[in-house]
Image 1: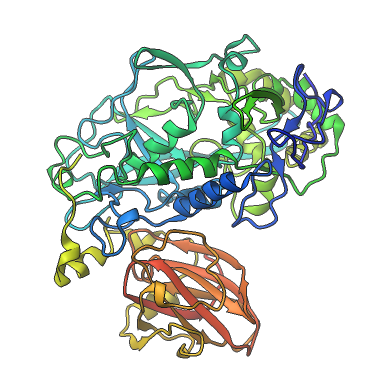
Image 2: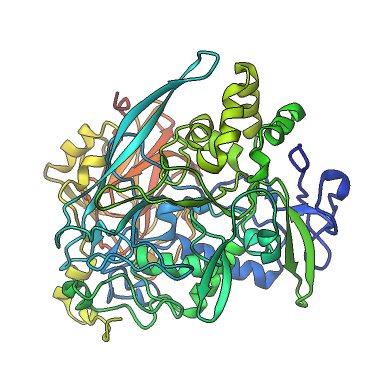
Length: 448
Length: 179
């Protein structure tokens, strides 16, 4: 496993846009020509694509960018037929509210109402590889907002408890452990078996490249964890998006978010998150069938497909610290390099390497990170290895960057200290490091 | 899936309903992490009525520390001094332009009761925002955007992309963060 951060090509040309191949000397996986995906983010309101787009691709991505940013409005709003149909229940009125220009959502700063980008999912435990059912009363997502005439379902409230500890060398640390309260439930309590799953909106940068990783690359045996197999009709596919790899494609992730978090139906998900007992929700008018047109859906998918991963402002130095990342065992799950297959204009597959620092597999990270059901019981939870690419950009551009699925960690150090279960050995190895080496590793993470 | 499409566009009364802010939980305005006491105090008062311009030349001048309720033209009739900084579908939107000045260099907040996109324009160019806050279920205010602005220069404030024909707005000097 390469220890250093792979350097990535910026200029893209030839058939699919690859040029200036990084070559095997830069750590590209065997059989691939280049490590791609990064680009400098000069203007955060105009996130770049990872390669030069053709005129028609650019037109689609630009339209999709506009759709992504668009505030959806109430069904029947005059002159707004392309963007009406918000709700009736919803968490946000646009994709952009939670993923600002594709970036990671803002996590909780302290105690209080869950921030906009922290959605409370309400699923019951899935049976095997099947789809989990939502709460029988409130559906898959708790909606704190609703259109006029419909009561919001409730509001997630976060309370943090301090958890203090120290390293073997005596240096102290403090984490904040969240407790979740669901306040103002309008139709009584959640089902006892419903899992309360707080999920912070992740960055979307590079997701088109993760979508292009072949299933075999994920399923082949490397290190720990396992592929998140999901049953879709008669097919068995690997989940790769969402904090627990619950969805199998950018398209599935996007259309679910449209339906469950904004109440916008699509050809893929023609119903929103009203349950059978939410009569006021079911009685509301809609904004068309479907509410997001196929053309606009394709455009917003195109916008996401091409999003590059931001280069870090921190120079990629510190080879020794990069080696440490591997030596500690972090790279076993946060794989620096993956193969991907991109498709050129003629439909040919072009192998490339990407540097996402994930294996796209799910891992048990111990009971402290596990979701709890409505009775407070923790259930074993498996988490997709979070991609670390773009970490430096996050740390240096966000006002209050938070990490992990619910934003409980206020630094990469805190995030490491939450690792347990399959990652226990790596965390222990980190804790055993001399303070200077711990700091060097944390500084190196800012180069990703 | 609901079987029918809304028809409230057909009636004037229903237009107001369709444009109304969505419902929300009771403590919706309590989640700001900045000190927003001055903005909330202003939004609790009576506004001065006005009309935003469809062009920079027609833009009225706003005073700082004052709540305004501005009527807005349909966005397709607005000629912005600089293209709005947020690329978005603007179907059904209202927009407009006003002028203002600030007395000293520093951070200032634009606060709104509706989810308009706002840009500040100086010398024909967009001034990048410094930060923002918002409470989705709150309208007093709903959204606050902070800009670092130069003193005694004529600045334009542009509204775009929301579907309300009115906006309540204040310009205030930023106050220190909550401790």
